[in-house]
Length: 317
Image (cartoon, rainbow, N blue to C red; front, side, top):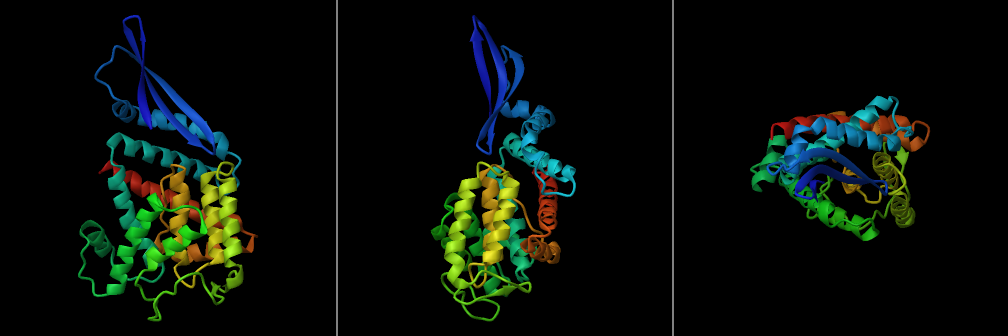
């Protein structure tokens, strides 16, 4: 967040715009001298007038932390995403529309995330449920799926901790009272039978807890050392390989990936349902360990697509 710093020398007040932020355990500070004896200006107004300049200065401070990240075929893509995320956060601060934009994000995210997993509910019905809580859509299971997704997003924002209990609770919230595609209710707890996804074996049931515990531990260990984009993508890939539940792994995994990003002040991302085939293929390639960049590149392109869309949404909000 930004603020105005006022220093008084004799009878003269000197005003400076200050923005503080942290990344990977490091603290950064931007100073912009404004002038003296200015009583009508506030920090949001100054940021609005100088959005591109302040955003670029923040990017240059962040740049050394991403220059050596080998997660994209084209470094420009990574730089574009970093700058776009910075600008979105600054736009939100200028307009003071954080809660409203998160609601708009929820509409897009829930529709796409559920659609990837087979839901047919139209985007306008998802919007209606989020805005009013009501829907006349004929598939009651898919309507409930949206309601559960809303609660799951709230939990991710304010209640989720990186431990086994939180992962289970997120799954319970997301699948409460739902039936799977075979008509059976979602089972409680971790999977008890092996599952194969995209022709690849996942972690066997008896290894779910130790592997998930290790993944959560690695996240805590690396969250101040690894760039948030790579940290989030690596977590998601490993989580999908563990596949801790019989179903609901994609939806829980994408939510946790965004929790990692948001905890580091990055705008969350959407995996768009129209790109679901490429999404599953990228995960399969990533899990072989031979073509990680294909996976990274796909998610980064989805991030850029998300940020481009939300830059426009915020501009018009």
